[in-house]
Image (tube, rainbow, N blue to C red):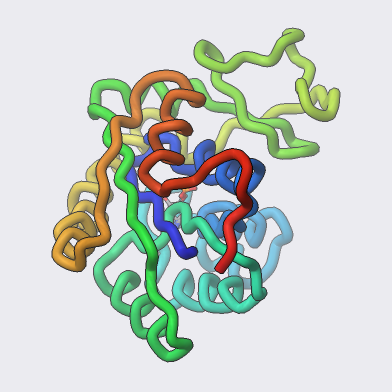
Length: 221
Ligand code: AMP
């Protein structure tokens, strides 16, 4: 299974993709995480994309297409793509890449969250520097103030592109370039839209229902 999650920044793609990985064995492929890792490691790729990302722009298509093609070749039973594709050119490249291997996208789920929720959701996010666990100041605080629930770490980080002005730019980029993917996948009969508001668990069960996943089964190819 190759599932794609589409949604504006803050729609919950990353949270839901991680849950699909944990609960159903789909491998999460998040281009944003791969690019942030490249920046952290100080690689030439990281140097190239750093200023684009902190300004809320899109990294050139050929870079992310290559990242995804490398990871899709790892032989996992199924994948959930989080943050890719983000432009029609990326969607077409993915389609062609999969077709060469006799594969195709199985399902595309758009997480619908009204714009009025987004800035509040995104600007409250922070994550643990050691293990990467994600939190929100209001909606998902740590159980003990200043201590990571998962690893006990005490250092947290806020993404530089989660500042309000940058979030507004990212929303504009989403409307300009990524929203065009909805008609693209609708035309192919692959698109489902789900309500992305509500608790993490509520959204996760809507998503599992659309993907026809049950807790008893792990996904096979
Ligand atoms: P995300 O973590 O998905 O919100 O992505 C963070 C940032 O990484 C985006 O604002 C872009 O600058 C860059 N990025 C991630 N995925 C892509 C993609 N598929 N195409 C272009 N840029 C991307």
